[in-house]
Length: 402
Image 1 (cartoon, one colour):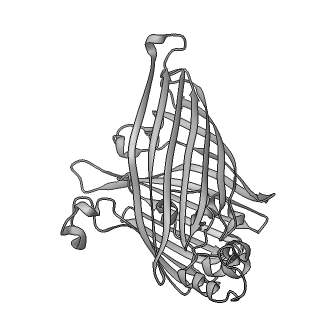
Image 2: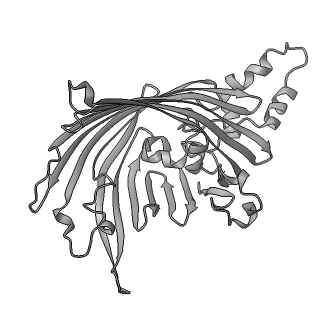
Image 3: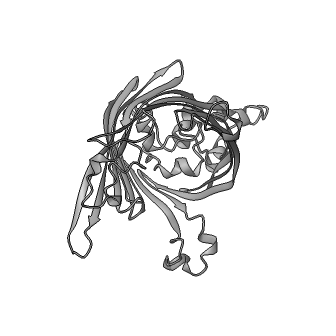
């Protein structure tokens, strides 16, 4: 997501004061759009080319702004479009809780990232990525593996198992004002017992259980207005997968041998700049098709309108937040041509939202998201002993080393 310019009120006042007295007041309101060169450094969170001393945005900012296609680039965008982050020297660490941490390092033409999630305990998931980037193109590789701990019954002994979950490559390049990106990966769905040793008895050989392998190819493009300029932003991605089911080391099952999937996702939004406030309305949507033997066919459609906003409230402080409403329609054709085995459903997920703050000071910054349930936690806001957790949901710390 592209970085947006947040025009401080002080900058607008300074421009207004320098307007010549005899000149008509027309140039003042159009100055922010036409004189982008002097304004961009003051309104950018961080420059994609690394020319700004501002700290990069932590991944949580993208979530707070509802992943708007015209929102400012967060540091984890390097895993989608590496060339957009070339030239930066920055470090970001983000903490959600004891079960999820992630870190990013950008160093001119090299980047590295790592994330650990233990939310599926007793299984944990680790992702590691690294690559090379220039202002014209970028590429990297990513590996995902899991670790599971099994506690033996009636014993103090335990064992930890490791399994490879996914390996892939990704890259991007610029073309005619657009970012083109793509990825190719092999993976095993996380619902597969083949590697989830926590659900397997010690006497059972996990390699005799059914296994699923998926090869996925994704390609996409995006375009967004320049910093400090209002305009249309969009992004589109197509992902195609081949799913292969098998049982190894003997055993027979009725799982289909292969299946195919195709998914198209799109985003469109607009960037409004009003007195230093960034208003970002948008719409996400997509369609997914899955074709196998049982069910024969599964299709789903979804749409999600949303709006997000970024408001400078005090010096060095910015309020971020947004909300969305989602609708999903599914079609299940368990046997083609048999109406009695056809089912469809419409799911209205209701409204969801998030709110947070960003504090910047010279070359470093702190980004935080507030727990959605904090308003109902009463006195536990300070102690953090509420059933739904403490005050903050996620906290990120970033430093620009340029």
